[in-house]
Picture 1 (tube, rainbow, N blue to C red):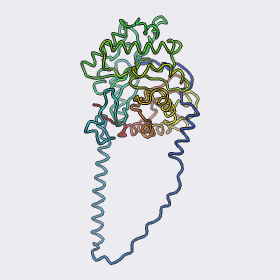
Picture 2 (cartoon, one colour; picture 1 turned 180 degrees about the vertical axis):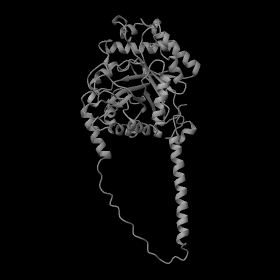
Picture 3 (tube, helix red, strand yellow; picture 1 turned 135 degrees about the vertical axis):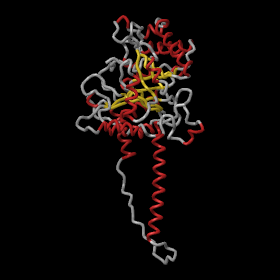
Picture 4 (cartoon, rainbow, N blue to C red; picture 1 turned 180 degrees about the horizontal axis):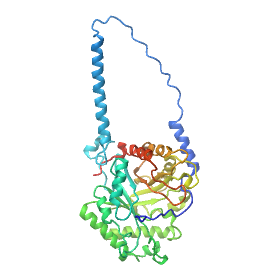
Length: 411
């Protein structure tokens, strides 16, 4: 199947969180949610039954109690209905939404919660249908749709290198778009593969960079919309094949500056890494700098048997990398879980559903995480299917992303 992203797990190592950090996460979870002492509840002493000349007959009291219960139930039903009705166009997490405090910032940051998005596998011409089918199963509209592109030139009907395809623009009418732009020519010859050195030197400006910059600019002028744009996601797996860390930084900065020179002001620059902490030194050396990055993203999974690891909870996959990025890359940039997901446990079929059920609780304590995008596909190799595996998992994710924290004002 050809969709706007190749199978591209470039390295075969485990990219889960460091095991020592995971052990710390488990200890922290035990402290916060572990065993507790009994609460010593006692039955309240009944008040003495003194004379009650105004006591109403039993049947009247029952009618009053039933009436009160009915009113309370009706109020609760109304509150729950309002809560579940709050979708991406309304904030369920902050009563100040009506006064504009929860509206997105200029950099598309939701102040009162986080966006929910996904990568939905698709062929080139059926993106809309696939996105709608995903949304129908998960029970809501996606805030962000994630697609992938290379830096190839158009050849015949080939459009892999074309940012903002017709299908993406139609999907983007009601959603935000995250475009991943990779310095690859998928299926091309070795001579056709761009290098960071060539990009930084401007050798692709006229044929690739400027062409796509003008497309994005025109899209913004026509629709008033911005797009998230990531250059070479997971670049920490692409060296030395694409170049050195310093060459990546120069290439990223060159593209940013070229867009700026062409007047493209509707891009939110999103720097996305694996988050694999054995690459910590590389990640620091490949950060382009605060002035060149608006959001920081990382891709962490519970790979389980796919990479021969133990089962990791959602908290264990995210927390250590989150803390490291906050300490070593940026203390205040909005963060994005740009790909997250879990493999299945064939011995415990409900385990995937249980994993997704924990997403809202963990997200709320990951300071600065403003978007979470589920990866609903597979990686190459045995036991590497990371897609939702059945009705129970779909229901669990649907309930998780119905949380008001993940339903924010989109405009």
